[in-house]
Length: 120
Image 1 (cartoon, rainbow, N blue to C red):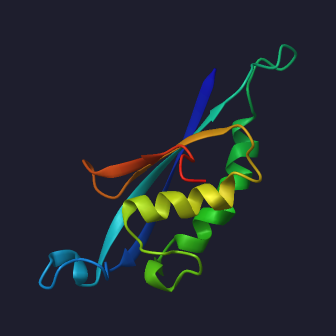
Image 2: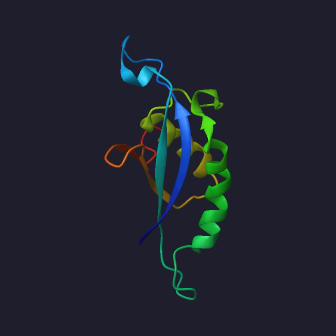
């Protein structure tokens, strides 16, 4: 069974590895949407994989580290692309969420990245 919960945060960044003149080299911001997906067995006594309140309690402090921040200044953020942010989030969340299956991060309404720990 998979369950998921969505979170939102606002942040600014600029991409440093893009070609000269690329619009993303300029400082800009996004309204990010994060979906955290867990995979596990349904507890027969409780009827759920995990209490959504417990999931929120784990994720919210990590999101708070990014919310209204300049992502280029965040320790461990190699390059704040959608892919880089998804990897950073995975590394922060996986130790506390062993059932973490996938992260989906939208930086716009139509663009984003999904990460399942394949590079770890």
